[in-house]
Length: 635
Image (cartoon, rainbow, N blue to C red):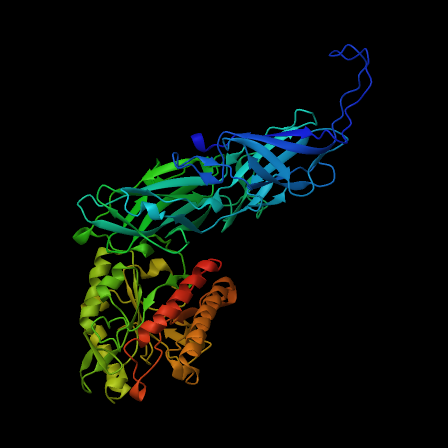
């Protein structure tokens, strides 16, 4: 890591009080010419340190330079020490923050009176990792990291966001026998740092960057560690304590998300104009260098922007059989990445996040964003649930669409409605949008949750069933992309296709392939129903607490509190479904949408949907980023 490598010398020297340094002189001693016994060093030790570069504060003149700050704490382990086998020490930097002292926070390490070689392992920060066994750390990986944008940078040409210092892990080891000279420990970074520079658009304009994600796919003979890994400090190598022997190569995927926050910790964004750059730093687990012959890794950086523009950039450092691998990113180093300028306008790539997922992931175990009453962009505020068109929602990553067609008469399918409100959007135009998007993004798919909107008139559902069947069999976009439902659908099965799940009893057959289910929209704790398709039947869990009438006509505040509770509770259910093999093929739909506060005849007020969105969507987001990462189902 060059300047990032931190040389940190800890001199273990005996205290002047209570330490035996005496002995007898002998003629056999070649140094003294006498009979002096070998010096015995025992008792408590004190630590002195000097550093070339180090941790806690990033140097503004060198993005890779990290310096000690007063109060930084390290933990040192020594299995051969007398009494305590580990101890915490606080750092007092010197005049240049490159030297200083260590003071024991409690019991200090002591030399063993029996002498012999002592093996020391040191970790910064003291709480960063735990010792799974001697010399092997269990290291957590923060999958949601933050980079802080300084307010003083708001109008600057280039912005360097301060990295998430909680992921600056440093380790050191040394083998020494007791002596007055003490022990020198050389600290080095453990995590690999990606320093990512994002330029503005070449052809003018502004990219509003809201964050990044770094996805790494690794194929090796070591089992996946999830959000932690094991690290042998002495060997500077990843190890696997979960398996007794290596088997066939396994593939695992891990994504680290980078949020941009202001100095108060609130989410923010950076407008990157032409000729301007934003630089952020991500911390990734080190790549196993000793296993380079049996490991392959592919890393892709995705820049999230609040527009139709995006950058998706695979890091190509090693070409193997036509596949772009990034195995040669050095472990425990600083690796600079300069991304290409984003495309914009008509050249937009769109949001194609599913394209980069492995084919074998079960669809029911994804986290799929959906939109309630998806076609209401042109409705009045009483019925408006979305501010983007279907085409715009697709570009922003939405993959599940709640559509509610009505009937004009007993033989003619009408527009999509929201209650008694006409959206002015036809089913044909929506499926044309789906088709156009999937032509441009064949690795994506679309799921439709469809329900007959009978509030417009009293036409019997049997007429609707006949009309919607006629529409689906006659619509070329759907006919060429229809997907048959089965409980264990994989991502690869749905690429380029449209899956319809009807809330009305549309008997599935090969002509329309629609799965059907039915659920109570007035439940509070979640409803469990059957979902039936030509490929099988399974349970579907649904929460659709859409108004105060679902909660006994509670007050506005009570309803919003209950809505937040049930939405987050359904996320916990989704997590359990994804981890219990008995429920591995169960599906889940969790509506965050609802309206609160009504006027005459129970009709929503102008801000009824917006009030709920401000409350529930915020709570859902905060809960997502605070809990352990796991699938959410359809939200």
